[in-house]
Length: 512
Ligand code: HEM
Image (cartoon, rainbow, N blue to C red; front, side, top):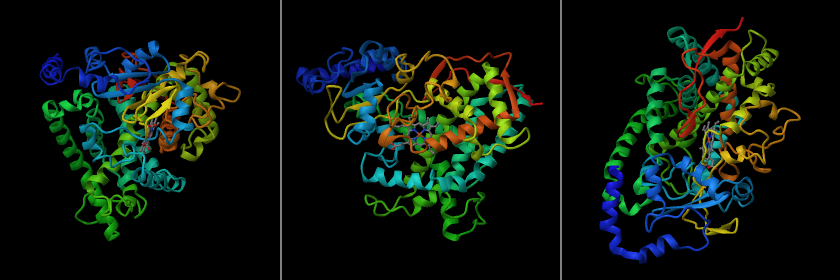
């Protein structure tokens, strides 16, 4: 409640003397916003939101039932326009994608972690975003690079299988999420810097990054920026402290790689051993990237920021998909056995699944798609914004509003999917209703786990490779069954992605 007390006090002292004039300019205008829940003068729906004490995404989920395909939530000085309908989402992201490809202004906290919007996900739609995204696409996820870096996944997956076995021996079960996070995080670090890190080092990075992901969740001054100087000092201090930790843990990797690139060999003084040849790590491309707005090149802070978005963007998302997929396979032994049979048909009982094998496994791909449909890892895309005031669905979308795309309704809408609550991978096999569905949303929106249009996740195919390899290797090596003391529980919770509230614990049995 201390938040509320503070809010009331501040409102009384700061806003009320300004009277209704300010209210009329900030809350009422501009005209013709989509409908939405009523709020109070000045603060709009903010009190209601704070009193509910739950993540924004749950509030949206409930308001959708009342307000439907497009609605507005006015919170303090910020206007949120929410889209939940497949057709409107397609219109905004694809048909008129350029108009809605911007990102809104950053909160003060996010500004610190994005180093003033110097990364792909937060950059305004313009030359900086274009240059960074083009470089990312060629240097990190281009097919040549993915092939060249196959050894990274091979190394990380061998480690993964070893750790899984060890954990099962020690505890009697495997905690799927934490193991998968660590493996994916290690792969992404190695793709960025070309070095194999110890599990210990990767775990430290992962835990700092977990904090980073949670830190920029919206706080009071994000809705009432006018309060920032009064109430945000402690919050900004904590954000700067965490940013310092992030610099301390990633900075040395940037420096070690730079020394390696400049000298062409591993410096004797460094404990980090570079494995990728010069030019093969993502950060190598950033050292010399020519960006018109940054005439001096990208400094260390920018490099840390850009590599951090790779680790942040790819770890939670992919690990969440693996955990939900395995949750269903543990409960549905028939589907798990189908998958096992398919893997054995492709690589044999004793072979090793590689990334080239994945496209020969339609049932595995159907399981991944059904998992993304049934459990989209992010229920909201990253916030979009219009580049200028625009009209959508007959309403005005002001250019300074946050345009939020709520994705779960698209895949829960019974008008679009049969028995949407059921987990049925077969719907993505030939003849099934999902077989022809374009999950990038280009040809129409039936599911958009990666967004769609200009801002679609640029690494979606890499994410799918990581998910596919993890699932195939784990199911090939072991039969996964529920841990007797902890029955798999489908309750979700919001932790940047929508994860299992009680992380999946499963017993592994060797395949005979
Ligand atoms: C299953 C795995 C993944 C899922 C479900 C996923 C999902 C998403 C979503 C929903 C967005 C927002 C799209 C929008 O705002 O319209 C996004 C953006 C982004 N993702 Fe992913 N992602 C995954 C894997 C990855 C990986 C592995 C990386 C990095 C290697 C990555 C890097 C990014 C970046 C840089 C953006 C920002 C794009 C932009 O603003 O132009 N993602 N992702």
